[in-house]
Image (cartoon, rainbow, N blue to C red; front, side, top):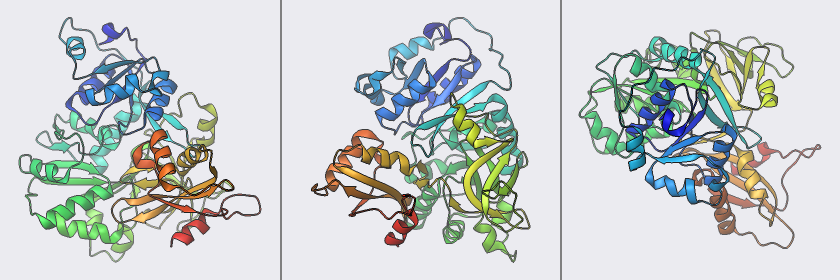
Length: 465
């Protein structure tokens, strides 16, 4: 691979595909050759993918036949000169034929292994620089804090390998355990149920909406859960009643984690022991929390003025430790704003109780989590504002029983322009991933603002309520 593509240690290679057996093959081959992997969500729009390819300076991009046309022919994607390789093609098969063995390329602990793109409040994705040391410590922490693994165990990759599930394959490789990738390459509840019939010691990472869909299927069509070991959930809020119902339905198999792209899956953990300890007088409160700090991080709450707060008082969650990323790729300003005095400023608002349990109460970044995917309002707002008939736009999240949250847009049209939801919806589809577009539009004469001209999103949420 390295010789064919003329790549050298430190070069970036992107993977843009749904879950597929070759996904992990490519990733480990790239690391073997000393390359940096750029995992990109295959559901993103061509504009978004091409931005990440260009910003990361990726030399090659591995994808599937169904996505090749988008990455090679799309008028937006042609802005990049990256080499696109279809893993279902003869070219790829020829590239991976055994020829001459090469030595593993030694890399330092501070070298970048994984360049993970996460959107920011500016709407432009930022590349989180995750080092080899970050990944090693994170994998070891999984084994001690989240879920022990035996060689006979299996991990199901139903959630995207480009995100959390791709982080969790590492400890399973360390233990020589099984990696199971559904034929569909995505989360299909009935397919997960069929796989549970054939494997033992099964664990998987699921977003709360996926947990809910799996539990609903179990209620309507009973299936075998004897092989189920652990469901690790995260990536969005899991309401207390929902987790109670999931435990009653699927059994005492749940662990919750909280993390960010800048500290992937590694900030807190709510263990099985805590979740299943219904006799604890504070059990209800603990189910509503995201758990306690994982062993390799230090966590604290800070006020806006930079002073630390006592237990029980709200503020921004700050984290530091050897699993926290090194910063943002080619973005010194954003790095300095997010990492200050050795602490990662998460932008999440919460409080820590006397027993060390963190409860999140808000997201300072106004992020919307829909179906386990992060959606940043500013990104959607910028697309809407690019439409010539839109004067103002504000986007918020609204509770959704199916998706956790759904995207809602409040729009002010230019004078004499008629509100047209269909036109705006198509405009969004043309510029961003479909799952990011608003599910509802409300047309207003003006947006509520404070004396400084800032849009009062609290007022907009009250309108929805």
